[in-house]
Length: 292
Ligand code: NDP
Image (spheres, rainbow, N blue to C red):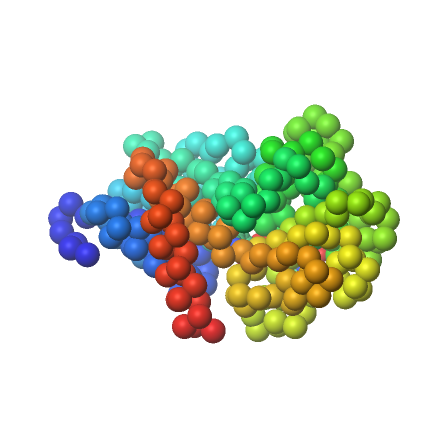
């Protein structure tokens, strides 16, 4: 990497950010795509978020990713926001424009591309979503954008699931999403083909690697595939449970990969070839293995 006077600057804003794999993703892409750019992290305190965005814009930082806990809060600081990010209620990618930053959400499309690359055709699946937080909002939006089949949301706090369902049903103008509390999963009708479950809660995240939102085996028997958005640990307890009843399971590493690829493509106005995406994924796996 040759940093000179023309090097364009990118980065990640959040708190904490020091363990993020995003710098690896983007600097590796820059190297492979022969782009004169650099990507680093910026740990920002909550009271400094406005100043950080203004300062980044003044410094002409060309693009930023935004992570926990600012994906929603940052929205009021942007000059324009894409329609889908508004509905999801979260932005994870900022693009420099003269008048201010433009906000996008690449998480939902990242999840779509990840599932597609794992052979899951969402347009042909009945879906169960565990959780109703930020990642769930992106997942529900993605499922409704690409599929007309029923979607069931299970969440510990049922009122949060109801709010999410009502907003999405209203936006898409159809009653596709139904909600239950986590322990009401028996209300979900059994179907011969089985469901794809997308696990979007933070339960099972390192270091609580033996935790799972639903213990009962009967729940896992409803599924043919389980998709966890968590990638640390690489094999979550949710994935173990799905596999124990002969389901297929995947972690969230590819979602992370593709949200990054999509951000990179937006910033640099180019397409990243599939073989380079695969190289990034390989490097991410090595990196996470090293940290584990
Ligand atoms: P939020 O804080 O917005 O939502 C957390 C969700 O987890 C809520 O549904 C919450 O339920 C549920 N939850 C938390 N603790 C418990 C518990 N003890 N029992 C039952 N449910 C619980 O988080 P996000 O949606 O932003 O993130 C969730 C996960 O997704 C994180 O692990 C994050 O790392 C991952 N993620 C991965 C991405 C990727 O690219 N692979 C992208 C984005 C996120 P309740 O409403 O009842 O509180």
